[in-house]
Amino acid sequence: MPLYRDEAVVLRTHKLGEADRIITLLTRQHGRVRAVAKGVRRTTSRWGSRLEPFTHVDLQLAEGRSLDVITQAETLDPFHARLGLDYDRYTAGTVMLETAERLVTEEKEPAVQQFLLLVGGLRAMAGAEHPAKQVLDSYLLRSLSVAGYAPSFDHCVQCGVEGPHRFFNPSAGGVLCASDRLPGSATPAAETVRLLGALLVGDWPVVHAADPRHLREASNLVSAYLAWHLERGLRSMAYVER
Image (cartoon, rainbow, N blue to C red; front, side, top):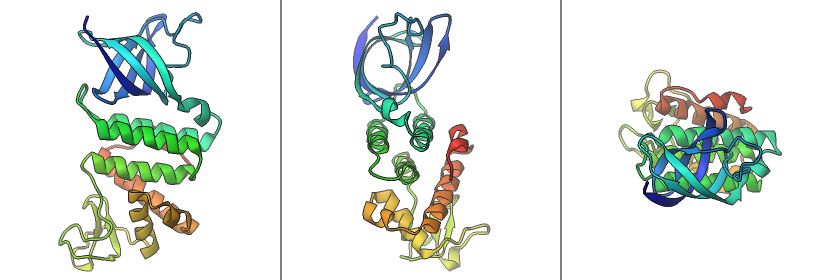
């Protein structure tokens, strides 16, 4: 079988037979890949913790008919070792993994930007320089943007008139002016809209200075925007305290 090498983040695993696992990966060059890790569930397995969710790994794989086979694995960054010590960071991290899997829909289609964004997001989450919820909200907005669902927080998404605007609608793709307001639009505080823009571009001084009530309102709007574009909610989001 032809071999190839790539770096990846482990998104998810599930059992196969008595000793194997199917590993779902987001790779740098090959996008989403599902591969078999043979014997990984045996206590004598050489893989150890290298193929656990969150782990950033360098892999060698053999191409298969339906599933590729992992033949080598070296740890580049064991994010799970740090995230597993903090409930908020761990649960927020699981949302990031599930989001990446849902947004990269085609197997073996390159998704370099999504891969780099996920690695950067997990590094920020594990580094604990910013609160977990804020890292998550920033990641979600950026990953949606990379997937083609970039929200507008400064111009009306219908007519393009520059804001600030009072209304926000996930189905429209961002803020709306009074003339283009859609039924059911939210009316967030002006400070919340500015905060959303800061989360999108990673303006951390603005994010850190935000009032807690605006942070909560922004998180709720990010969740609504994500749910709209994914068409169904994330199972892991239920464990994140919003």
